[in-house]
Image (cartoon, rainbow, N blue to C red):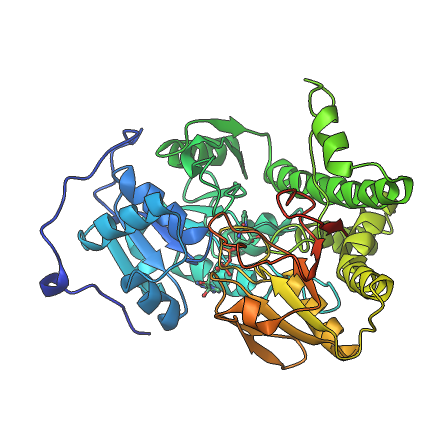
Length: 449
Ligand SMILES: NC(=O)c1ccc[n+]([C@@H]2O[C@H](COP(=O)([O-])OP(=O)(O)OC[C@H]3O[C@@H](n4cnc5c(N)ncnc54)[C@H](O)[C@@H]3O)[C@@H](O)[C@H]2O)c1
């Protein structure tokens, strides 16, 4: 496999590195790198940068040469602070090495796996990337190394894909090598919660593994919460994201109920939020996207199915979540009908197509399904989104973001995602606006979903 290096002659003079948190244990002289990050996506790249900023020598590995080129060209979708960190890291190649060569993993004292854990079209977990990454890590393992899985996954996965295969290779876990799980809690694009300030939960295959895992995380995380096993740590992440999924489904249902009773749902949620305990605000919307909420609860449901364990509440929430984009299409057709227009030939403009504000991430975005389905029923659909200049729909259709949305003269506008820098000044009041965010109260005459 090839190795992507940043050449010394491309480098600006090196800058002093900051050590936000001193490493608890000195870097081992037996290893060239303190930590290797496997998978440099929305989670892995910021994690690699956080370790580098804390003074660790980082081996940053991805199987995709294209991804490595994007990172080296500073083209990755990052918040500003991580963009600055990347600039600094790329100036110090001895301490931040980008590579696709898996053989190099044996040079790192600790290996953190951050590869995708998606679901397929039948909502069955696709473990292929995680299996491949773990097999690589196990094959490269050498005495003294620590392996940490951070990808969200089913309960028992770290045992199945890392602990058991390492034992088969003859390692004694907790003595020769250390096996841990600590789910990543990063919220890409959210500048309110820096990765370092969010506590990490860690479990180990043995108490010594847990200890070593906590040390590794403490190099950059402000707080580490230890749990008694790998399974507890794995299940903690599943609870966190299932909790969100169920509450989003409930918020959507409350929005529909409030619509039927003509009560403003956002005002209700904000009023309920004044209660300092026993309530947490979740807001309704056009559906959920990204790599977590539409996927993670299915890892649990898939596992429970094999055990014949009923999880009715979670199953119902996930069914409702999956149905939400169709509900949006029905509502658009309904609003058009009330304005005396049919769907056939109606000009629909979707504002914001990424799954949440201020990221370029289109994975599982409800907007894609909404647009495809609106086109299926005869509407003429365009979109505008400065964070997503081009989209591919599941149907194979493609669209480009409109440079001049006003010139499209839409019959109806769906505000799907509102980036903080989105300019809606062109909305002249002629088009009907459906507010899929429920929170665009500045748009005169909007109707809610
Ligand atoms: N994105 C989020 O908001 C978020 C938040 C918390 C946790 N997570 C979890 O973190 C994990 C990673 O998610 P992500 O959003 O960073 O994924 P991503 O798709 O953005 O990035 C994954 C990267 O891993 C690389 N990769 C795939 N297989 C590999 C292999 N065998 N070896 C090396 N690299 C490989 C891909 O090329 C890609 O660059 C998932 O389990 C996800 O559920 C994601």
